[in-house]
Amino acid sequence: MTGDSVEKLTITDVTLREYGQNIPSAYLHIFTPEIRIKIALTLIEAGFTDIEILSCVHPKVAPAMNDGAIKKIAKGLGKSKGIQLITLVPNKAGYEHFLSAGLGPDGYDHTMGVFFSAVEAHNLANLGKPINETVREYTSILKDAAARGIRAVGYISAALGYISPKNKAVIRPPIDRVNDYIDLLFGLGLTAVTLSDLQGVADQKETREFFDALLNRRKGRDIERLGYHPHNIDGERAIANSKTVYDLGIRRFDSSLGGTGGCVTGAPGNQPTEGLMRYFHSLGIDTGIDEQKVLFLANIVQTELYSKVPLNRASSQHSALSNQQEGKNTE
Image (cartoon, rainbow, N blue to C red; front, side):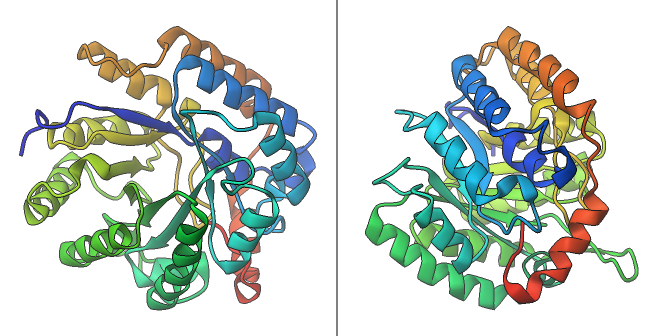
């Protein structure tokens, strides 16, 4: 399959949501709602149409996602016509928070993001329940969301594999299972489904083999609605994998400023937005994004946030696991 059939390219910046979930409570005076609003508005000004903003998780897991901050940021950004602001919802409690914070169509009109893992061991670690229970809960949530006119997108974590914490072996889900999950989510009305290499376990060859097999099974169905979200300890490797996926026809990519972020269940960072954008521009592809504005913002974020806030993912992971029984989880 070639990439010639689909022209539109979408880069979703996930800095505010993924980085934000890893901020320790002692540094919330630096990672304020005001600076988060400023970053979001600058991303919009630079040309981004899709931005992950918030996550409706318990503040014990992600202190920066407390109710006051969510409401202040939502109000500060308001409704942005033509801009998809994405807020993740991990479960029913998160969905109720999404509604009470006024993020539905009658309020600030955010797009809801739902997610689960393709690997049972990771879903248990991340969401505290088996995949089938997560799917059952989301099915109920999405039916209610559809009745309210709430847009939704989906994420399948560990689609390319998960490193077992017990024996360090890579557990790779069958491609047919991943394909079934994609069909399930589209069948529930989602507008896009993004596949995550949660821990950067696949190199270029393995990434090509996975997507080639998956897309061949799908025979081109919904390719324009499929996305790729590579975590990797090395941003350049993540971008190399995105090049491979792009060649196969995928046109939706997630990234973050400076490549920061990752998941509290131990995943490394993301591919850098500025590097991914530079790659596409080198091919003569018009992303609609102002490269200089993004580089300027990346430098500001590095100076004002990354250099001042040490992320404690180990602590965050412990909090996430300790709160599973309360249904207070994160991505």
